Length: 168
Image (cartoon, rainbow, N blue to C red; front, side, top):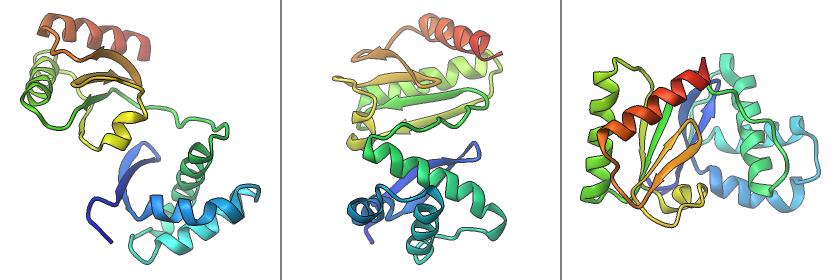
């Protein structure tokens, strides 16, 4: 399997890289779309275990996350996993502006003594899921707050503060 064939999913609040997930979902789509969550999760875990370590103690959590990803892919309604803490995404291919935005967000979070997850998403398929038409883009707790520009640090500070207030 190619190294770029890794998809990050949230399992019990943690981002986990899964090798081959998109291939498995594509292969299962025709025959499994109308089956039960339990059947889908058992088959997905069976297929993915060849290239991924899935601890027995976390199997149930992985099962829920994998079924959620399968249902999202099919466009079926799913219950989103509750977000714990702050999640900040920088969407962009890794250009100078994207890197500057990431550094600015990291600086502001440090100045605010704020903990949270900061992820720079460079995969265009993942970026496309947010519906942005330009980069860099800034997403805070799944809400797109900036597209196509590198906002000033004071604006980033404001958005992070607002997200923290809404979360608590």
